Figure (tube, one colour):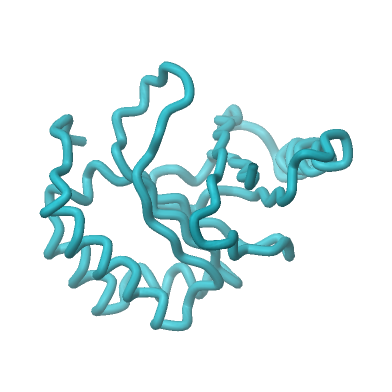
Length: 158
């Protein structure tokens, strides 16, 4: 991953290309934007691409689709400063209102956990919305982005 700051002139065509991928009809939701850290973080990503899919098959098809490959190749090395978050829909609303802020929290589970343990973690996180009325929307699931298969993430609109 590079550590340079992405210029707005470089981001504009990348944003257009990434947002255009929503027309592939393989995604339920696709959004791209700058990351604003609310507290110190070891993450050096400057932008995040958040995508929700109906199934892992849709993700696999999207990953090799010629339009997706073209956008990725046209935006190297800028794309290396983008955190990709690929999730399967858990039935929750997946389209935040335009201009909405999102708070994203990532939990890295131990690699040797079984499916039952992962499911329990997601169940507990899912119950948070019932405890905090200020949370308008909460969705969660495993992040299936390449090289991040064991991350479990929760996303809430605040």
